[in-house]
Length: 322
Image (cartoon, rainbow, N blue to C red; front, side):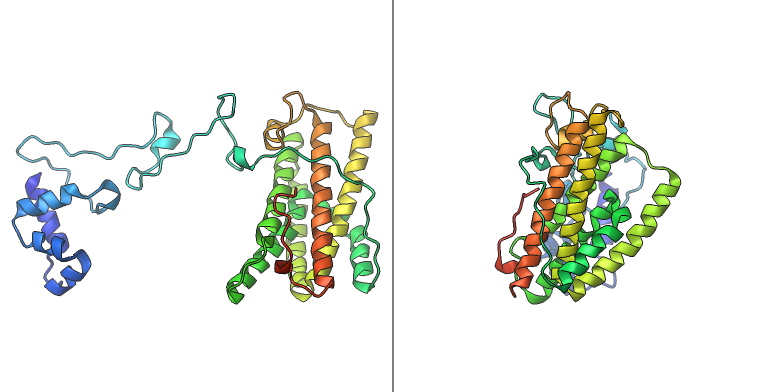
């Protein structure tokens, strides 16, 4: 084993094409000096390297005459096959998270510190009265985009806005006032709405195809709209969120009438919104409607900032305002 490691070290660091100056620049004076020494010194140096900094060079499986066996890499995790797939070379073990009661946290799409209790104290009658052409144009889009209010599409505006603000911040070397995080937070929140309703009803193949087509059109349309006029883009989303509030209010009426079965709340919704364990679909819809109301407020607020001739970064963003 000693001869194998020493020979490998010499082949790795003392090739015919590498000059001593190059080795000094690569390894440093101390390492270069040791490599000029005996094989035993080279072996000692190699063994002392931490596992995370060692070379990925594979050694021969042959055993030395001293009876030493080749040490095989050990998995970081326990008996779980998923954990064994993690390479010990990088030293990154799979994270294990538990709830407050000690049970295992089973959601990979969000963590306990990303959950929250919904603020249901919302004004359902708030409405931004259009007072110019752009506002009226945005209001008209509310009725034409009802099909786009699927949760798969509702997460597009926040992602597009956050992405464009992110790129602008990089170009201008300026902060965003927290608006990047706020808009991405909105997109993530809308995506969690989708993850929740996927547990309630599974969409059929043609519904998925429709979503893909609508999302492809809407993403590009909203992208261009935001480039042309951020104040118009945010106003459109504000009105779309008003329509979403109306739609979820009608949903609640159908639940109360018994037209739609008030099934138990999905486990993912209970954990995400920190709902009681005996919550129902009605409780989930209340939480989702509250989120939409907060998105309404944020986007109308963002549009108002632009209408006042300012940039979003000049007004602190309402981070955490779901």
